[in-house]
Image (tube, rainbow, N blue to C red; front, side):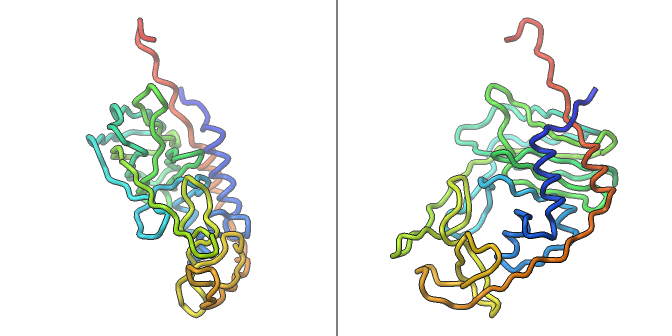
Length: 256
């Protein structure tokens, strides 16, 4: 018998879903900085960005480069499952997870580094690629995939190493780069209304001057209005509520 979805995961996803289209959306705030339009497809992917430790591949200061290590595990399942992915290789900092929906029912979610989660709504999108899957709990080798009871899915999982570059520091002592496990730098990437790329204070989530990395030379301005609230399909909320966590794997007789 399945148990309910982990409260922290459910809360993170529900919070992001309800915030899409408003200034309270973590995902949308980050997208607004880069002037990326948000649509309902963002909800379909349920890219919950509650963790500051997302592992990404990019060239900006503070980004984390990942490299797959160890064996690959592929499983096909219906509903929630706990997958044995073996012992973590030395230096592993996360798990790369590729999920493919086999039908158009419900949702599949996986835990990410920190307290975040990423998921895919199978009625709206068929695949999901996660590079910052959370490592198995200490002393275990199982990775938990949460899913609606009737959702059929295939997942391929592999451990990954992670190397994070240092944030840049300008002459004013300001740090610049992308958010990571260390938190938020003073300046984060942004694209001005005139198309020029630069940096904006991480606190200016609703727009401001875009500057060079020196923190002084203004190259443009970004004006961000609060997007109209995106009406949520009740089916998305219903499917989220249907997501469950697989029960713990029984300890073998005589085990500790």
